[in-house]
Length: 255
Image (cartoon, rainbow, N blue to C red; front, side, top):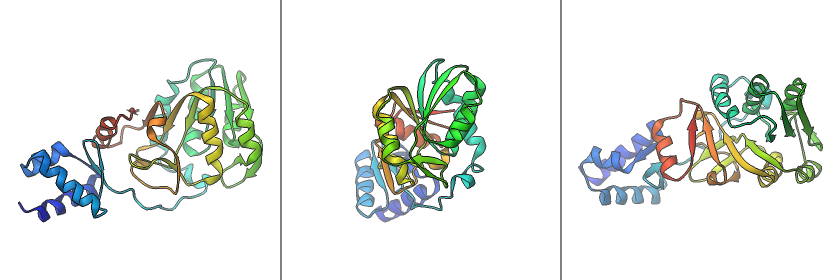
């Protein structure tokens, strides 16, 4: 098989499943590891893929439509609930935790209310405040600031400064998208300083994202994936992507 034929097949595979492994390509083409690595290096120079340890991923998709929070609350609900069920197991009674804003954060908080009895929750999301305050033994601390109606959250200098006053056991962040190459990303610039301050103030950080958010793009980078203790997702995530993340030293857990 000529090199150009292999290039076409590799690109087709990436369009289909977003990731390929070196071992998979060696078997598919019956060629050496060195040949596959040369193919991947050439295709990376052409902008067709991004090489990672053990294989390659497709370039992150361009930004899609990102609706207001009220619209996103109805998207991928079952996936969000599934990953929330697992993530709640990371929380212990009497923990002090930070919960980010967003639609997945809403499902996570609802699950917390059903499973836990006593927590201290710090947040800048009015949805999280409303849900968590229904639990009589949850202490809910609101970070004030300038209110952002579309995301139903506070932001700005006062919010960020308030965040710096606290120390938390755990910090739960809900990025817009995840990428091996670019890390955890968001579409909401107003959230970025608060989330980064929360990560600095917590003993452990967890990234929670449903399977539709992997290897897609958003304009703002929150952090490297390695900055988190682990990435929590639902069971629908392709196992090939899971394997590549793990080969790149990212702890990824499917609900």
